[in-house]
Image 1 (cartoon, rainbow over the protein chains, first blue to last red):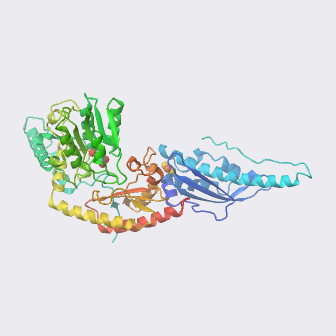
Image 2: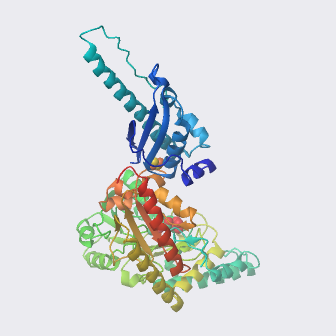
Image 3: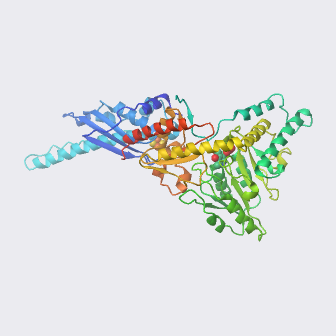
Length: 158
Length: 389
Ligand SMILES: Cc1ncc(COP(=O)(O)O)c(C=O)c1O
Ligand code: FES
């Protein structure tokens, strides 16, 4: 039923566990079957362009089926060391290819991990923007703000 | 002791007993005749089929012409339900936790004009006979309640319901027929149709160490049943098709074996192993036993583990060589949790962490010890990496 790659990731998952002081996290529940995944990230910030910041560390906790655990493992493996921009645009097809495919009924499990990653990244960007906005409102009285909103929209096709 | 592979999924299917296999072999080669043929080949086959039919009739305490061979319990159940309602669109009472081959047939009949009531079991996985009886009305034609549930192993009060229906029938023109799917009960419980007061009863060979694709149903002479298959004059007009002679021989041999004294000892041993597993597994925090503790067949245990998902548990155990089953949505293909657990009022998120073990006569206490040890480790590991604590 499962490919060799899926079983291997299930057997020896990469990046399983939690980060004690994560910069951000994303948690999603799967409406289809009721599974839950939480993904933690630590970021090394790119001061010039925030979306070019890199995912330094990444960990996951998943309550779910074999496919869900394998997807969590492979998504964290792919995302580690990559930019936020890369992570937010991670495509389902790419994940499925890495896993050697999934049974039809299990394809939705791959979305769980991708959504958790996107949520974690957005959580980070949100925090970053909130911090910037605070600084700006402090400086607002003196100079004209040069607010540069940082939000990226996912190009991922579902 | 080195343990390689452990099969704890005997409710799904069983290993064919060596004696059963041996009894079947001649009917594939030398005695390959069609039991309907008139020549010596046919006579030989027919003689053996007659003997098999007698063995099963004796086991059920019925007449030989009341035993109809089928391709399994799915066909037996389909024949009974559809056969009763073919030309009479009345009322059917069944339970909400039947095997899919009864449940889906009932839903199909419902779509085609039959009135159907699905009785839900109580929290302990047992059908309240009063609820069943109170639903009987003028146009009720059939009551179909399984004998032992295949997921949680709970035993239903078949004899009691049957007796009450028999009493009601004395004052009725349109009799209510009573059917039970006895697949999971066959090797453990009372199978005398006179004591069960049933009009129809279904069995499957591969759950009792017989070959797959083989089953039978009992049909009381006084009932009028329409066949599902039409063709030659086989099975008293209730099931056309050349008889599966080796299958029938193997099935009847399997019945002989479960009726033997030897099997009584096997059952005691199975129960001892099951009780050990239940005792040990319940020591794991956040674990519940599903279904009544006493009123269950001796080979079944069904648990819920909090914050564990059943399919990953199954896969982890499989990697250790242990075969079990789960009612988790993730393992179902349809992505909905076990209808049996839901019918008992268990929440979908809890059903997620369900595990069924079903033992057989080839299991040993050493296997159970190894299983418990591995299970404890796996549950701990899965919980450690769950976002819910
Ligand atoms: C209670 C029950 N009824 C019916 C069946 C179907 O039997 P068969 O596999 O012979 O069609 C099964 C087994 O899957 C069962 O457990
Ligand atoms: S997470 Fe439930 S089916 Fe994969």
